Image (tube, rainbow, N blue to C red; front, side, top):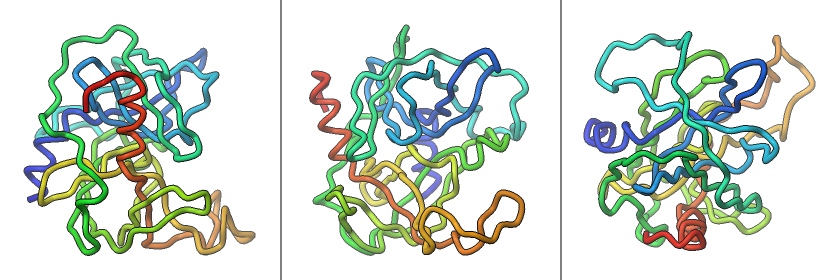
Length: 225
């Protein structure tokens, strides 16, 4: 089942980066959502003053280098931004014709607790891992954040760098959410650290924001979903 998810969605997943005098810096994951060159990601990874770009994935079924020494990136602008619900819509500055699978976007109401899901992204891209990773989990619950944002709670340790990647319902093959982060039982960080890692911040509970918020941004942009 995950093989089909990987083949269907892997080519549309991208690294989100910021560019500047120091070169290219990885900030998160994202995915193509429309043939006009629009890309969905998380709002929290983006600083609106940064110059942003995307890097397409390496060939999915080849043995690829873990770290890319040179990259071809494509400039993007922020088309829509919803920090309250942690969703952003980017647009390629010079869009090329791209192919997006039909019926790509699903609906939160069709997803049941216990459903099997897959997710794609670039975990630890900030640490130099530049290969797309396919993972799986289940929907362990449907919750609302403190500000009311609808989220899927996942029974998986989603790693840093996956934020902004697609959450896919395996049964339908549709994207139902955007990976947003992992629950930390000690809040934003702990007092005891090994290197830069705070003890007590790991958990196997992660979150994905409902795709309906991204759908709303696409509709605000005048896109047919």
